[in-house]
Image (cartoon, rainbow, N blue to C red; front, side, top):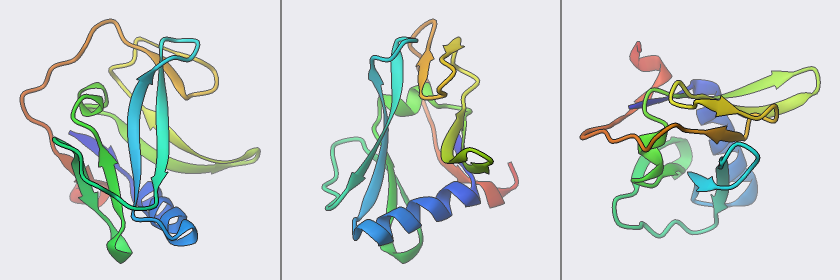
Length: 126
């Protein structure tokens, strides 16, 4: 289970509408100074891949996470924040054992394995 805040949800819909795209795919890839990187991809046309986890948003847009990455973000909160120096997505991930100052590179002590997971919106009271 992970949490996508209302602010993140609205920004994803805004990006999709601006780019005339179907979805934003979030994944975790090997790389970065801490071992893994958060990866964001705007999908012009969403073609489902086996085991994708999708969250339907406003205007027919979607937020997509693959089945492997979802294990690494179990318990995380994905938010969109506006600060003095700009705006960005922020992932608060309790599973990360290390992180780079950029906030996009993280390390994990081991692969997480959850039998079940779900997507929860911030207005669901969690």
